[in-house]
Each structure stands twice: as C-alpha cells, then as structure tokens.
Image (cartoon, rainbow, N blue to C red):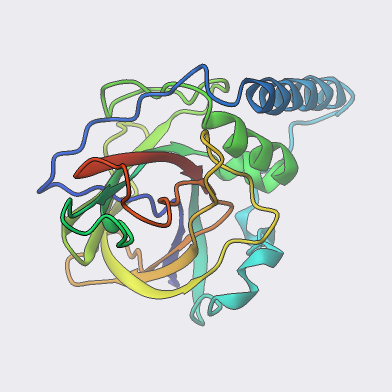
Length: 254
C-alpha cells in the first residue's frame, strides 16, 4: 500500500500564544468583497445547471489532481505517495513586533486555521474551488474550531491546524466523526513566493508563500507531506511602525 500524501492548507497556529479565531472586517475592501463573492455564486449557479445535464454524478478521483502551475518553485511530491485529502483552510497568520524596533519587520508567531473538505470540489471543479478559496476570506468562520461548514459553501469540516512549538505545525484531520484521516506533525521543507497575481487580503496585503512540509515523528494514518498552495492574503506589513506588539492577518488557502 502506498503511503498517503496530505495536500491541505498549511495555515498554522501558535498554541503558546493562544491566538483568537479569525474575525472579519466586513467593511474592508467592499468592492472586492462583492466582486469575489458574486463571482463565486455565479460560477456555482453555472455548475449546478451543468450538473442537471449529467446522466450520473461526477466521480471524485484525486489521482487526476496535480499541483497548480504556481507551485513550480516547490519540490514535487516524493515518489510512491498518493494524494489523500485536499482542504480549504480559513484562519489567521499571527505576528509580533518589538515596540523598541519600529522599523524592523514583524516576526511570524504561528497562526490558526479551520480546514474544510474540498477534495471532491477540487477534483471536479478546480476553478470553482479556487474562487471559493478567495470568497472564503470574506466570511466569518466562527469562534469555534468546530465550525461545521465553510460559508458561503456547504463543504464540511475536515480538521484544524496549529503549531505545537516554534517549528512544528500540526494537522488534526480526525476531528470530524465522518472523516478520520489522521494527524500530521510536520516542518517546512521548502517555500516559494506566491504568484504575482495571487489574490490580495482584506486590507490589500500580499499572499503568503506556498509551502511544502514533511512529516515529523508521530504522524498517523500514513500521512507524510503537505502542500500549501493558492494562498490569499496573510502577509505582514514591511515594518512594525504603528503596529501593536501582537496582531493577526486573515487569509485563506488550499
């Protein structure tokens, strides 16, 4: 049996900093909000109409899914692995600043994410999945990691993601009773800048890097690798000038 390849969001959370769950500034970037969400619903309506013409439902075949073109700067999945799961992640990147050094760049301090099962959506309608990833940034996930569905869609919960220490990201893909995939503690193996046309965040911030992460001891379910791709927002400002000691930047990803 081949080992499994986990292909999910790499949003992370600092458990030692106990960051709050994401809240959305509904008034930020209103024109972009409307355009992105409208694009999602228009595309969804088109897909629903198309599905009515099918004699049978689409087949969810992850063997035909490949990394997007923007991941060319990352190493390929290791040999003899197969794709196990795809999630859309919605959460925050967390940063800290030293008030004595306002011209220094903010330092990453983990993040927090809820993961939603997008495997079949990506396999059957990748463009719709990408549009949902962008639209998800404009919707509240909730104050609980047990949020059951990702607005504005009906895709269900598949896990949560956070850091157990400064270098170990943990994916818990066993929190939904109907989807017991396993757990994967992992560390960064490689990164690549997001494409120049990657979607901006709620305040116009750039998209965080795309990543490959590999398993550390303690992984279950045969999970071995993670790719974070299709990122939306999440980057910190260039300097700490005018920023608090700790802050969050919202983003979404696959």
